[in-house]
Length: 145
Image (cartoon, rainbow, N blue to C red; front, top):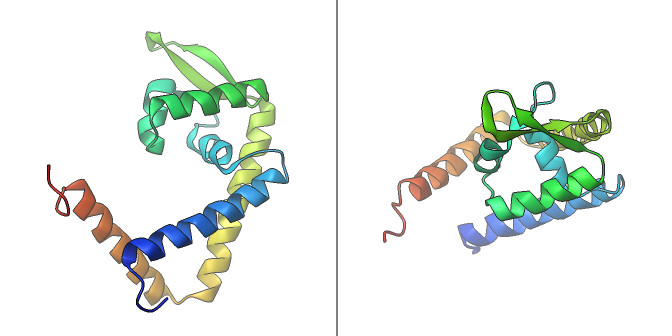
């Protein structure tokens, strides 16, 4: 990927990863977005609907659509939040917990295989560069308003 911009490499790599995850998820009649959501929900006590979006870096409307789809598929149920009468907890059903395990296995397999093909030094360099990019964006050091 010589002479490619950092942006291009990030986008092309993420698109390949997303395509791979969606192909695996499709084997279980699911999507990458549903798998990611399953992994973001606390499997024992559930997760507050108001904290789930920010935790996942998603807008509320996108998350609402995913949660509605997951509820229709029997992966989650909504329960009143005992700590906040106005809030709702998103809880996994037994079926949701099974699909969460599948999602977890897919992610861990990806991580294991990549780790087996790169050195720890290269992986540390990848994490360092990703961290710098994240920090520059978070601190608005690339584009300011």
